[in-house]
Image (tube, rainbow, N blue to C red):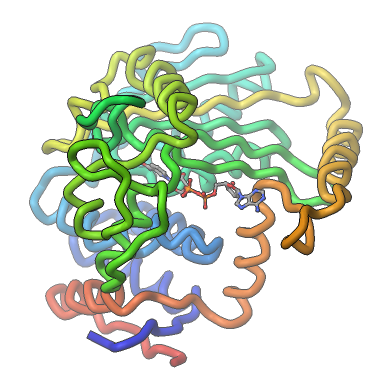
Length: 349
Ligand SMILES: NC(=O)c1ccc[n+]([C@@H]2O[C@H](COP(=O)([O-])OP(=O)(O)OC[C@H]3O[C@@H](n4cnc5c(N)ncnc54)[C@H](O)[C@@H]3O)[C@@H](O)[C@H]2O)c1
């Protein structure tokens, strides 16, 4: 294992990931889509949902736990609502189809909501919400996840890190893009600390199995994730659980994590044009963002940011200089490459 992180270009990582997926029999268009979604996450600095996930996906595919050929099917479409069965297909492929349905329906009806069940992990929610904001619509995406989080005041996992994401088209400003786990951080941040040999994590990320806060990475791995902001995070996670699994008729968080994984996802597109001309809406978003960003910074800070800013900046930097991959993650990717006969790209550093 290299002692420190390696630096690889987005293009090289994209090619490597695509070839690894091709090598386990994923159809080319789906390999490309999965690779694109993971590298996009690394580019944005959300490494927990970047290539770190690929060895897990490859294993799932090799063990036959996910059906790479399944495209899912529409269960029903009624008014602005579409119900989808992912048929255990690749999460990214199901999410892409569901986003297309949501945008298509919103363009006709003003709003399009898709609830999908029997899907798989789709990476970072932002990748999908952004597809809707790129179409000039407001995109809202949620999903449920395996039960690593107790409801507030509990000490047994009953909820997932169930993310909530909203992407809103901007004008001169970048789209406003909030993408957050309903825990203090996504579980992948703790996996990242572990795989890269970091013994400590920051306070308030996790609890031990008794529900007592811990900063020890190993204790956290055996324990539980902390709901974001106490009972409010539990409430938000329930909201995602209701709109994804309960409404979609899919598996609840407590039923996830087996084989197949059985995740439920929700995609909601809102056509701005039904309320205001899109240009006027974009100008109003710019105004709102500027109202926030011109707030005098609190002591100890140099500026005020809005959601999405840290990731846009990171993407600018990483496109120019390359993506740092932690030593443990790189080792796991290279081992997958050795096994599947796919050469890893040369690191820039
Ligand atoms: N697929 C799944 O099962 C699953 C489950 C959980 C989380 N996730 C993903 O995990 C990723 C990471 O989630 P997270 O909660 O750790 O993210 P995070 O805490 O790093 O960021 C959350 C949000 O806060 C914003 N933000 C950060 N700093 C800010 C600042 N100073 N001012 C204003 N806004 C700021 C970010 O732009 C982002 O929108 C997300 O992409 C999410 O979709 C996926």
